[in-house]
Amino acid sequence: MLDLSRERDAMVDSQVHTADVTERRLLRAMRTLPREIFMPKSKRALAYADCEVEAAPGRWMMRPRELGMLIQAADIDEADLVLNIASGRGYAAAVISRLAETVVGVESDEGLIEKASASLAAAGCDNAAVIKGNLREGAPGQGPYDVVFVEGAVEETPRAWFDQLKDGGRLAVVIRQGHIGKATIFTRSGETIGQRVAFDATPRLIPGFKREAGFVF
Image (cartoon, rainbow, N blue to C red; front, side):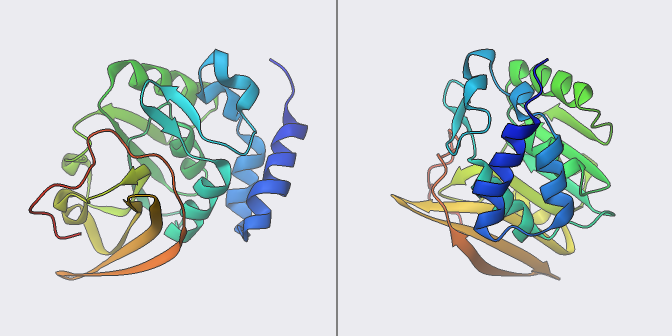
């Protein structure tokens, strides 16, 4: 395997750190994890580029800058149990695993689950696992969670994600309305859900997450 440590350092220094991502554990994770093993071989030349990368037909990895900003905004603690919705090939789960106690990834695509599991094992992420499930339903049997982290944008947010948060838990997700996207942190306090916008972002929509009637958020 090629040594791409210089490329990882350049990614962090020129894309992530310059976007006011200062959490040391997060920066260390992004400097050390080989992002290229979490993407198709045909796309590995883009591993450290400032762009989204198609991980599978219709499924995209977030730009390193936006991923780092959203993870930092989620304020993940080393004792946290994190649910990663739409794990794809597992890169976000790998990064989060360096910050949290345990990461449960949910993915609906069997092929992506297989690839993510192999890459997480190769990267030594023993505290992260990707399981098969409906992305809208999450993984209630493994929760409740301190953080629910969604990799990609949605136009509406299923109630099931909020229901799986612990009291004080955070949901980190980018909400798209047309060409406008807002990285939003929802926080549960009892039966109340508060929210704040962390930054503007426009990652691609996760397939199947266009707005439907009947959703509050």
